[in-house]
Image (cartoon, rainbow, N blue to C red; front, top):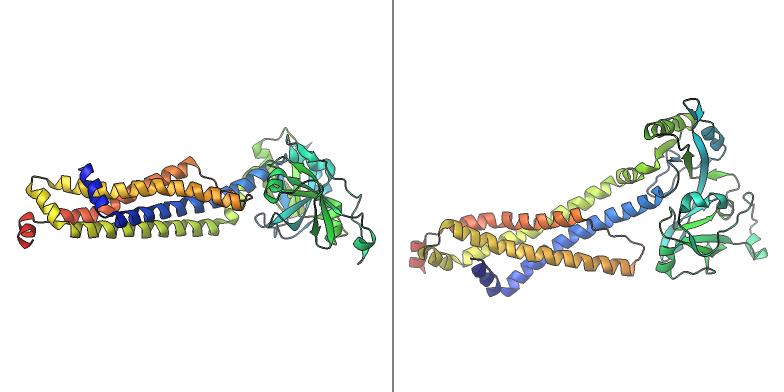
Length: 390
């Protein structure tokens, strides 16, 4: 029966090829959309979780997804450092981060303004591959309208990560523009740090016209003796003390997922709709095949083929279409991922084994479901009536 199913599909090559292509496109859409959304969120959260700090503090109106919103006053750092857990100091260090934005490698990038001495907290074991770490001013300066023209030595030093360097073909010494101020790359660090671009915090404040010590985020490095429950308690103490929002860095992925929940729902709906359309196409194809093949089915029945054999043949044809389409869809998704990451190297598409297995399960399950009703129609054929009519 399997050979007969193969022969039936090859008899109508164009129709079979279009059916396989429909399945392939639906599987590709499912994998690429899910891989792109999950890959991007996981890549961003993974970089943020690489910071050697346990808590991130932000204004309640600050969005961690878009990295924009209200600011924090650095005078709040002393209040955070004074918090105690169990009559013992709970905070080891508070690291302020001021954020800016500039275009590099064709995309808008967040610029993490930090103090040079705080960089090891963000780098961890990662090394500076070329160039060197920047220096900073003691405090934000006050630039006049023509200050940058009168002082050509004034520029914004940048430290970028290796992936951004490769994506934009950027090297140490390259100069860009941050508003009206030149920005010069002073070093390249290994991929995986929280920000793709770092700059000295006071100099970044200066070029943004901020003359007061404000920040967008505080990373809190807690005492190593605190356990997870105590860290959660420290978050609550920080929120009560500062009236700000505090969350564990380890939960950053969940925070991003909550922020982009509507996007996740939209992607899921698009994927489901694509799959439904795909398997409706398969259903119509199998339905048409059964209607066209009434005489052949009647002959098989007259030769002794029982109902289960006829149903099995119909399901086998559908499974062949869906299996080939699923395999083609996975290969096509891999090709699309390569193409996207070649054209836009900063985009991350992640294909997890569980989603590949889901894609295979959806393809096989869809093949069976889309063949059930056409198979039922095939079983209703009366061989005597069909052959007499023919």
